[in-house]
Image 1 (tube, rainbow, N blue to C red):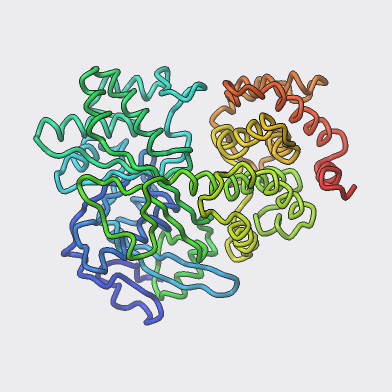
Image 2: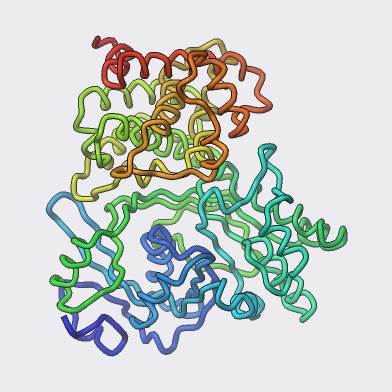
Length: 487
C-alpha cells in the first residue's frame, strides 16, 4: 500500500475514521513525555488529543524514547500521527491521534531532549517508563550504584536516566529564570508522584544540598492512577488497520473501550482541561491507585504466571479456563479486604467490569507480555497485600500462590513464551530445583528485596514455599484445583 498516514494524506481517510479536528500546524507543545510506548499513545496522548481538538492548542506533546528509535522511526514520517483501534469483540472503532508533534530519541541526542524540557512553553513532563526505569535499590531508594545514575552525576550534560534529564532541565530552567515544571508519573508505582518526588530529590542531593531543597520545595509531582489494557501491536493488527484506513500506518495501537485516569490536581503552571473528557481530578489518588494495582494489576500478574505454566497464551484464554477463572475470584476475595474502606471504590462492581475486560478475545493480550519484570511488579501488586493479611491474622493462600507461580514460571521458561526480568542475571544463580523449598524462596526474596521490612515476611516465605512445592510435585493444574477445592 503506497499511501502513508501523514498530515497531507489525513484528508483521504474514510468518513468512519475519526481524526484530529484541528489545524495541526497551529498547535504548540506544552508537554514533554518520556517513554513513548503503546500505553502512552492509547491513554494520555488520546486525552491530550481531545483537548487539542477542543481548542486547547498549546498542550501538544514532544514524545521521547529513552532507549531505541523504533517509535520515532515509525511515526516521524507520519508527522506523529497514528491510529488508535478500540476493539470489543468483533467491533473496532478507529481514531487517528494527532497530539504528538515531535519525537526524540534520547541516546542519539540527549542535548535535544534537555533543550526541549528547558523551553518555557513546556509546563509538564510526564512519564510512562515502567517500574524498572525508576532504578531503585532493594530499600526503595535511588540505586547510586547503577552505572547510568553514576554517569548522570558525573556527566550531567549527557544524561541517560529520567533523573539526569529532569534535574538537568530544572537546573537550566532555574538559571534562565523559567518556572519549575510539574513532573507527572503515569507508571504503576504505589504513590507514584510521591515516590518520583523523593527519588528526584535524592538524585538532586547528590549534586548539591541546595538543589535538593529546591526540588523538594518547588517541583510538583502529583500522583496518578492510569487504567487501560493495551496489548502489543501485532502484524495482523497493522494489516487490518491499513485495510480499514486505506493507507499504511507503521505503528497503530490496539486497546479496549475502557479507559480511566485519576490525577491529583497540583499543577502550578497549569494543565489541559482533562476533566472535560472523563479524567477525574482529586485531592488524593491513593485509594484509586491501590484498587487498580491490586485488583487489576495483581490479577494480571496471577493470570500471566499461571498462564505461562499452563500454556495459555492470552489473558482471554486464561479467563476461559475454569480453574484460572475460579482462582482469580479467590484472589480477589483476599485482595478486596485490603483496600481502603468507605472511599467509594465499589470493588465488587470494579471486579465485575474486570471480568468483562479480561475476557475480551479481540485484544490478544499476551501472558508473556504481562509476565515481564515480575520482581519489580509483585511487591506492590501482591506481596504488600499478603503481608497485610498475615499481619491481620487472615489467610493469604491465593496471594502466596501467585508468588510461587512466578517462581515456577521463571524455572519453566521456554523460548516460545519467554519473558524477562531485570534480575535475571542474579536469579540465574539460584538453584530452583533444591529440595529445601523454604530456603530457595528465602534466597529469591532476598535477591528481589521482597517484604524486606515487613514483620510477617517470615510467615509469607513458608507459605510460598509450600505452594511452590505443590506446583512442582503435582503440576500447576492440579495445584490450582487443590487450592480452589476442585481436586
